[in-house]
Length: 333
Length: 213
Image (cartoon, rainbow over all chains, first blue to last red; front, side):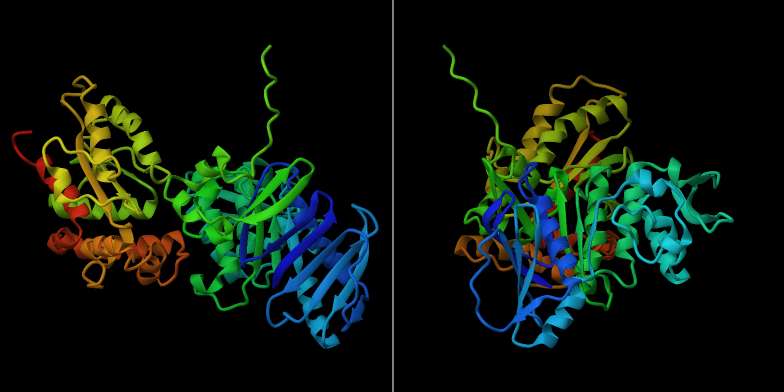
């Protein structure tokens, strides 16, 4: 949906542009703009809720910090500028479009952008069934969301959960009288019922990813921070594939519009899994107080580098950039 | 026969087991299932530790290791000459790691050493799966393409041909891999002929059954 984002003086992103693919894995050191990218997308969604200045004319850019969004077809003619009154306050939205109805359609998609940073403490608390319309940003209402899923959809998710984590044989619910609901996992041996508060952090995160992957009405775009967090390296292939199910539905025999994904990670093991799709890897480069984005495939030597070893190891070595800066050792006397 | 398989994914392991059984002509028992490596060169790096572990801590008779050649130098008959070692050939490197590791280990658990079963899939294991289904996919075709500077296909194209997508789910990948592995296991001659990297593995495995062991 979003073709590119261009930043000018937005936090550490002083002058950089990123072309977005259907799936984007962003790696880089802390403070390199990964979260700022997601914040920019959420800002776009927030400001799109309100009436915007719509113009067909070429107008000069904002003098303040600015973010420019361009879109994929059928919205390729639309361009949206966010103007910021400071590095941290962006409240100006300007839309350039040849037809206002095109913006109306694009806006509908923008309003369906969602961002997630899973919180296992929040997930362990039984939510009210009334909160289960869609997955919350911290997945704290996961039990309610799954409780409201159609039985056939829930069965698919349950089967996938049990395949990924074979120590479990099923999922069930405990309904409280006050409309709160608790998700329960059934152990394969002994059929013991394990409540969410006793499930591991990684198990809960896998459940949340599956809730998104099997969502019958998914968002138009999903941003997930630290997608590898709490998950065993050997399970990362399955996590990647769950997200691929969203962004490449035809590869999984599904007929629905693709969901654009922006995921961040610090895991070399997850990065290894993108050897066959380097075009999906974005490296956030941090140089002093400035950050910029670079696609792995934009490096002229990326093919040769990929032949030399696991992509995660190559990234960790520092030759791709996207690693923390180190203070040079002081010269010996 | 008890053996271990070191592979990059559950799909590779499942298919290799079937192929190994096809060559050996008997069911095998997997010792220490789900040994994994993160691709080249991690395989070569973890192999000494795995061989040592299998030798001292298990009753495995052999270890099967198969890696993708990717764009590396392909093993040829010249490499099999006595004393020859090509430093960029993955089969030569795996054999060297095996040789250097086992020679340092004293006998244990009633056997002299862990037996070697090493193969290289050129350029990727999907080439093996396509053997017999797509006559254009052979190790010779890949070698000729390499020599001409125009590879006849890419890894991604091979995935498309095998899985119908270059982003297969793991269950789909396992299904497809097993289907072709079972087809080859009934008669491995075609695969051995078109893919000498598999023939190397098959030759290793056949030495396991010799009474002189």
